[in-house]
Structures are given as structure tokens and as C-alpha cells.
Length: 99
Image (cartoon, rainbow, N blue to C red; front, side, top):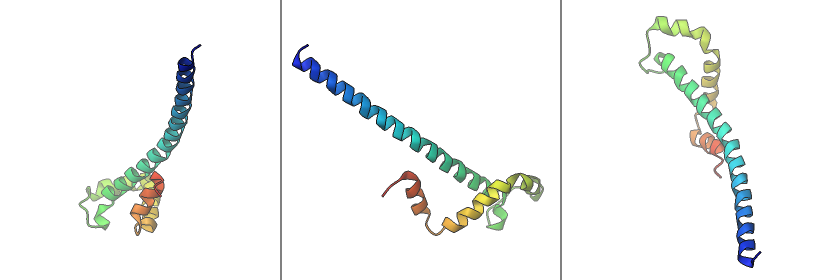
């Protein structure tokens, strides 16, 4: 085998390993990102349904009351958002792992 072919094979092997490592990291971050997005969507849903309390037009009160028993988790998320409301960019940067 010639020297050029050997170098090409070694380079391809190293690129495969680097690509595999990058793929693992991206897959690990994807789960965290999706979890963050789901939490944000739950918060938006809670704000839409309970928007009357913060001045946002909301659905009729009968629909809101019918949804209240189903919204236990969304209310907990909304209350957790109150504690991070002072630093929303910090929360976003921590999810995206930006230093």
C-alpha cells in the first residue's frame, strides 16, 4: 500500500471518529433542547388559558374552568417561571450551554 493511500485511510478513520463524537454530543443536547421547548410550550399554554389574570385575552371562563383540573403540571411550570423571570436570557444560555 502506498504512503498516500495509508494517509488517506488514516484521515478517513479519524474523520469518522470525530463525526461520531459530534453526533453523540448533538444527540445528547437534542434531548435537553426538546425538554426545554416542551416546558416553554406548557408555559405558553398556561398563559393562554389563564391569561385573564395577566391581562391577555383568554378563552371563555367555562373553558378555562373545565381545563383547570388538567393543568396541574402547567401551573407548576408557570410558577417555576416566576422565579426565573428576572433572568430569562440566563436560563436560555444555560440550556444552550453558552458561556
